[in-house]
Length: 415
Image 1 (cartoon, rainbow, N blue to C red):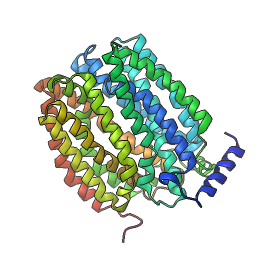
Image 2: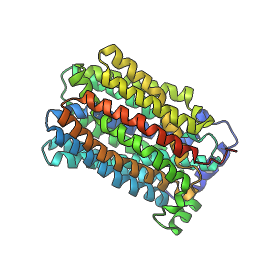
Image 3: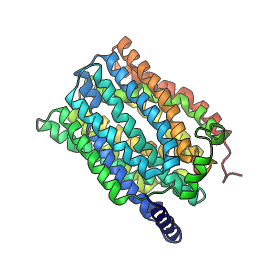
């Protein structure tokens, strides 16, 4: 990326600020959205089924440890990618991501043995964390240029192709499994699509971070927790408990559906796919909903998530599976948009990548512990229904904490 490229990009964004943006996104953010969508396919084609696949190879505690190692690797990636993307730009950070992603997927196929298996899984998630932060930092650059206008909508709209791919890839993978392909082949497809993702990024995506912002970021401290502001830390304190509850159960959703609901993994893949496609459709319809009452939207979404976790704990049957997965799309859309808008509220332009990365580091650290606790509950009780029930009740308990934390947060557009 040359200085001339940065200038052209800034000129293009300046011109776009005077015209209607489709879905609230500039042309370059739509290009980023396409790249993220391709990268999402490379992950989603196998990750929806990964817990089921691991159960054929590992013990329960080894599965919990594998998920936790993946989360730990993501934590390192979130922290480093947030800093790196502020210093060298979003595009270079995104391009780096695809190397460990592809390498890790191919190694999982070649050496599916303990203890190498969780290490390779960690390599994949280290790379994937760079993609996730770029998918948040790129929109944050536009939001900063627009003075915070429609923040929730911009954050969620850039993920619309990713949700669509997250829906299509399990449908495609389920058809492969039903025709006799092994689960390992899904990892091979994922590894191949990391190459496609890199080519797409090189060809289409242009830098979103202005040169002067990168210069300002390099002049300041690498890690500056105080610079994130009080609103940021209030949000962290408010959402930490629910994040723990959610991550106790979510990694084991596939195992719950296949083992205790007694539903074939290919049917679960279809339900997962329809849920993500529903999210993609609702993104277009509800993308700006959270901007009207961003704090209230986050609370309502978390209450709905807790109710749906309770539904998974007590439910059963194919019809109920499809209903729950499709209904889940609504709070997901609202939650993502509201949460990310609150993360960057009041954070300087040169620190938005670090704010997004730091928040995800904290939530992932909580999730890493929660995944181990979830696997222990599964081991002790012998039932994933109990695990999901405990997660749901815990989520409801922490809703009060979220309400108190959000009430203390002052937004720029609030009286």
